[in-house]
Length: 227
Image (cartoon, rainbow, N blue to C red; front, side):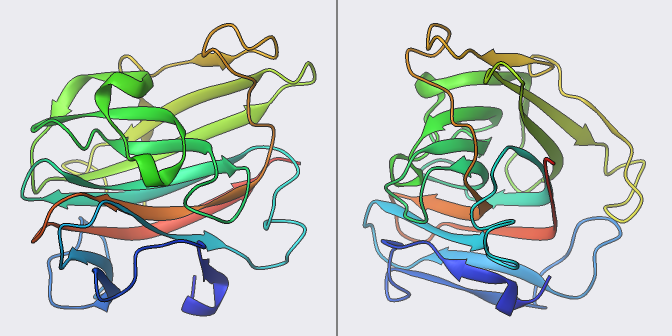
């Protein structure tokens, strides 16, 4: 996917606060190419930056239902910042709510979490509606696939998968369910999470920060929409 395939989420921290761009100055995940997309916190401002997939507006921007997203992510230097993916974001702003998937920003080593909320609030462990049983070391690449599927009843079924990069590349993955994140139903009654599910919306990648000198990377982003 090219730069022209994405738009910046409204309200993203400015590039004077969080620099972001492609770079070939860092080691990719197994099977990755020469270029990564990176984020670097230049100031201690709290907030998020994000990119949403906008090709074929109305099909992907926004999507009428859920989808499947996959990407490799790497977090560097511990707590207070994290890369993430998002699906079913209700608008194209960092203040809009959706399903955020990434490493909890407030622990290190960190668990993978799914958080229901706005990118501007980050991915705190206490807000997780799903969390992995295992933790992931700082500087390690994590290659995940996430299904957010709208059911005929308007329940939303969420599952998180991982590709073992020690055995398989990002280009030829073998995804297995993450222990602790096999299945979660965000029910149409709003009971399991305390609020109604998000039935469709925007999808993409982002970065949350609340400290200076943190940085993170994304690579090998793929997205499919639910038909």
